[in-house]
Image (cartoon, rainbow, N blue to C red; front, side, top):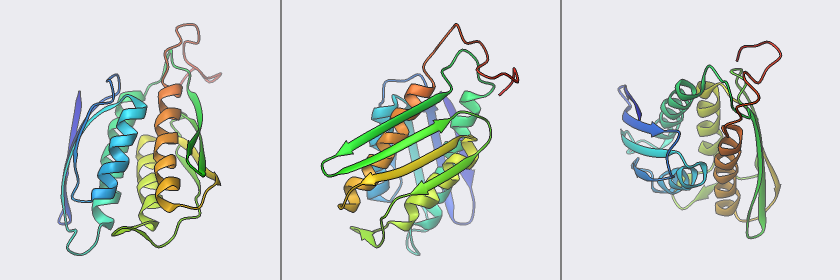
Length: 190
């Protein structure tokens, strides 16, 4: 299990991660909706996660959400690169009732995010604009090229949860072992 800590004036975060886990999690961020999303992410990616965050949520949830994305992304990147004997590409369409969200990704060591979810306002006390902040921080630090696109949906909770689950399943598929492929790039390095 890899562990990383990040302490700033705004947050104190410790995350432990096992990419080859079974989807167990122990998550306490102080942001209830984010806990729920990260538990779903852990379960469906089969990544074991322990996350502890003490953040300035008396101001708002922004710093906690973004900084957790940074630390989690760093750990995923450390676990992945250099890539060899892995599928590299992953995709998933995840349905939650009326919502369907697609995630397509490339473990390219070159970060890029296409984010196309039509969520605004709040889910409970959670500002939905923070979903994009989380994904951007995660993708940039994990160095993954990622497209998260809403195919349909109306319920914000369903759309957001489907986006976290689609990322999880796409990562699980992209990290599937493939001994025949060696380094999955014509450049011979990722």
